[in-house]
Each structure stands twice: as C-alpha cells, then as structure tokens.
Image (cartoon, rainbow, N blue to C red):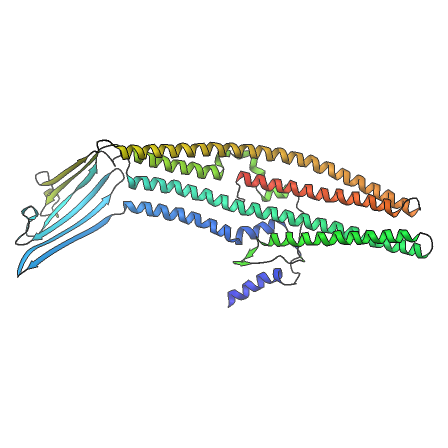
Length: 460
C-alpha cells in the first residue's frame, strides 16, 4: 500500500491538472528515460544473459563425482555386486585428473573385475593426444562465452543508444511544435489588437468598412493557424510521453508542462558529443559486437579444424590397496588404456571446416561494409551540422530583416500611408521566416541526435 501511494504521488503531477511541474528540460527528460524506460531496463538483461552463458560454459570444468552400483541375486545366489565411485577434475588442455574406488564381489563376477577384499583404489589421468589436446569443446565454449559477454555489452549500448535517440527526436519535435504554437499565439494577439483598432476607426468614419473586414479575416486566419499548431503540439507531446515511465508506470506529460529552450552546447554535453572527435570508430558498439561475433566464429573454426586430427585418447592409473600410504602408488601396479580412431575420408569434418570458413568470410564482409557505412555516415552528419550552423545564422538575419520591415509598415499604417493588406503580407513573411527558423533549429538538433546514434554513444 505504501509503494502504491509513493507511485501515485510521483506520477500525479504528470497525469492530473496540477502544475507543480511547469517545464521539462532536455536533461531532465533524458534522465527519466535512462532511469525508468523499460527498454533501457531490458537492455541490462543482455549483460545478465552474457554472464549466465559464461557461467554455463565454465560448468564444463566443474569437478564431478560419479557412483555406479550394480547388483544381481537369483535363487539365493549372489551373482555379483559391483561398486565404482569416481571423482574427476577436468583441466584446460585435454587432461582429466581421476580418482577411483572399486569394490566388487560375487560368485559369477567377471575375473577381470576381481579386487581385494577392502576394495581397490586408483589415481591417474585421462588425456588426449590428437583431437582435444590444444582445443576441445569445453575450451571452445569458455572462449566463445567470453566473446559473447563482450558482444552482449555492446548490444546493450546499442539498445540504450537507440532508445535515447528516439526519445531525443521526440523531445525536439515537441520543442518545435511548442515554439510554433507560441508564434501563432503572439501573432493572433497582434491581429486581434489591430482588428479592434481598425474597427474603432471604421466606426469613427476614419477608415472604410472593407478594412474592418480584412482585419477580421486576418484574425480568423491566425485562429485557424493556431488551432492547427495546437493539434501538432498535442501529437508531439503525446509522442514525447511515450518515453516517460515512472516506477514501471507509463506517464503522460501534462499539457501545462512545456519544453525549455536548449542551447547548442547543452545538447552536445547531454548527448556526450563533446568527445566525438576523440572517438575511435573501431570502438563503435556495433563493430565491437560484430568483432566479438567474428572472434567466436574463429574459435569454432579452430575447433572444426581440430576435428581433422585423429582421436588418440589414453588413460593411466596407479593402483593401490592402501591409499593412505603415499608411496603405495607406484609404477609396479597400474591400469592403462589407449583408444585410437581416424575417419578415412574426413568428408564431414572437411565440410564443417569449409562451412565455418565461409561463415567467417561472410561476417568479415559485413564487418567491413558496416565500418565503411559508419565512417561515411559520421562524416556526412558532421558536414550537415556545419551547413545547418550557416543556415541558422542566415535565417536569423532574415527574421531580423522581416521584423524591421513589419515595424516600418506598421508605422506607415499609423500615419495612414499603408494598408491592412500590406501589413498582413509583411506579417505572413515574418511568420514563415520564424517558423522556418524553428524548423531549421529542429533539423540541427535532430542531426545532432543522428550523430549521437551513428556514434553509438551512451551518456553517463
């Protein structure tokens, strides 16, 4: 119950009409996304999957204790009773340490299984001299699991980066729609003031009635533009709300909350673009993931190549009735075996190896292509950002010039040397230039977000 109350208190300012939060900066917005968004939390599972895979692979080297017991009694005769207990310790290079205890009795016991009355102890090693000496499945699984752990870390960064990129573009679109709405609100207010003034002049007989009609049309036009801008703002705000979660609960951004104007330097800092010039493309998460995948495939290739060697497995065990006496294990009592096998044509093994090499070539082509695409995309986006800087400077001067023209036209109107039509024309040009300036700013910020996405960055 206490947790529910805390969640309601946290989320209510967003969902209700309360105005406890009147603005939401880009920093705060991305902070909510990084901390609470389910995809970001899901990305953390990638790390746990990698760690679990590594733990599973290491399980191949866990010591093992085995007990095998067989007994047969028939018609009051004990045919046999066999007990075999083994303790094994796998090691890295195809060698296995073994300790064994045998205790066998019975009337029909196979003579080779006969042991002393107190049982027989043995200690020795099992080894591979062909397949499995330098690399075997256990070793390969460990190495591939380590590479997979690196791959999952890179994939986590890519997932988080993608979420933050989409959230950033949603915020910038919301900021654009909000600024456009403020423009239309301001010019609607100007049009209404002008309409009241013109109407008073018409009623006083100083102006013709057509001027009042024209001023009224401008008010209606501005009202229509404002209504369209508000619909656009609503959609942009809801789109930005898609990325806001609080304590595993989705939250809508209140319509009283507005985005704050973010400076260029702040965007660079928030998206970690300050260090982009020092970034090595080879460290890009996507290339790291592909590189780790390639490393894992190379381990698999080496394992397949090892299959071309003959199978030579051997065992050597010292035997003793008194294991508590160390020198009782000596070369005078032992049990040894060797097993050799070698396919004549090796068609299966050679086919597997060739397929493995072809998969590696395919992955290398993908790596090279991805690397080139990333480099070219980063270069293009940096050039695009430089162009937008120039365009933003130009549009600011254009807006300033249109403001000067409109102010001059309004002064002329007060002296009776202009008309509502000319003022409306100047005002339309100014609105278009200001909206264009907002759109260029949005494209500039969105391109920064694209660069952030292309670099695969994850801010702290």
